[in-house]
Image (cartoon, rainbow, N blue to C red; front, side, top):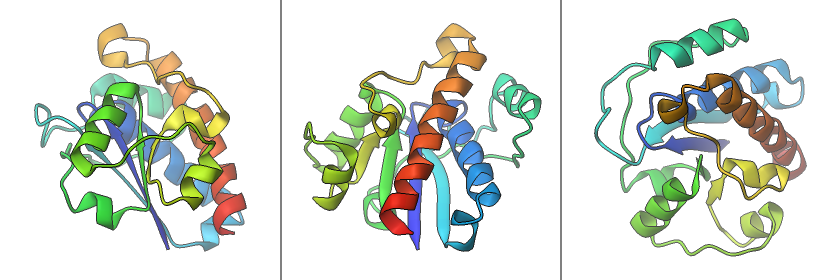
Length: 166
């Protein structure tokens, strides 16, 4: 089994969108759908704890044909580092917060080398070789760009999983 936790600031937009996009990609992939892959999401802050997926995020997922369910935002806990194989943030602030919380240092190696060396914390765009952040639609209202960024990252993550665990 492999377990993935997507992380953003509030867990009402980007990380749950990534969770549901990735779940659909896994379900639709003949190789990966047979694997035991657990996917969830969380926040680095407490401010949205308990809240559902943001309405515009729901609308974007519906528009793109991505199934989702009732969501309750939750905050990272210490045990998450032991529970999940990959903790995938959406931006540099998420990465800094997780590294500080879990005491993991960052390296400049590629994702495969980092994973082989036991690193668990990654930024989603790293999987397709970018050092960019997934834009936060909470501030921009640009859910289309956020969706495209997340979809591109999840597609690359899917290929990483195929090379790494299949």
